[in-house]
Amino acid sequence: MNLRHKVDGQPAFVLHAYPYSETSLIVEAFSRDFGRVALLARGARRPRSALRGLLLAFQPLELGWAGKGEVQTLMKAEWQGGQPLLGGKALFCGYYLNELLMHLLPREDAHERLFATYAETLRRFADGVRESDLRRFERALLQELGYGLTLEHDAEGAPLDAATHYAYEIERGPVRLQRSGNSALSVSGKTLIDLARDDFSDPRSLAEAKQLMRALITHYTGGKGLETRKIFMELQEL
Image 1 (cartoon, rainbow, N blue to C red):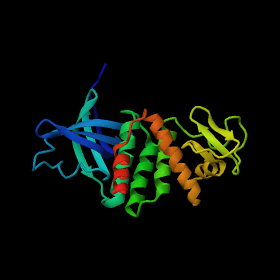
Image 2 (cartoon, one colour):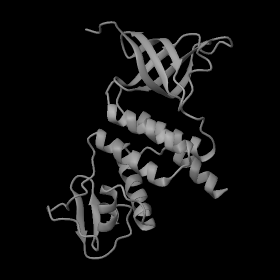
Image 3 (cartoon, rainbow, N blue to C red):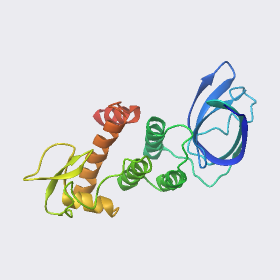
């Protein structure tokens, strides 16, 4: 039975919004205690709507909603402040995080730690984008969704060797190779050890971690190409 319920004072961020009817919006929000929720913001597209300037991505909000079913009605939105507006590369990377959450995060599946990681990553972006922050967020997202990487031992249970190369098999973990491979899932033991330690000071570890995360995300999104990644590659070509 789909019972009506009411939520108030819920910390949240807008992930995506799209028009609904002539004056309203459907807002996909990432909330702390209820995960990703779809909310109908009635009249939000009207020029004088109080919601019009509030429902911005990457800004901390406090939302209230009520209703039943998959899409509920937004009742209140208050800006919480403290997050500088993102621009340039930081804005682009913020949209990348949002696209990952839209593709991978199920609706109404709470992930309080991931919410905190997302908020912290946005704060870091405001000071300048570092690739290590992207890799940490990707790893945290996969961990929260039950797709955590095996980074302490290989598929046979042996401790990882920094000097050895491995093929990362998604269902098994790292499999020892006789020599370096050229696949996105081929990484050095040192990269896996550094990834476990959140240590991206070695440029090679950072580059291999990026390849590995890209391959894993492609797998878990069912091979769907991310729009932000396509746009970034087009900009690089230009």
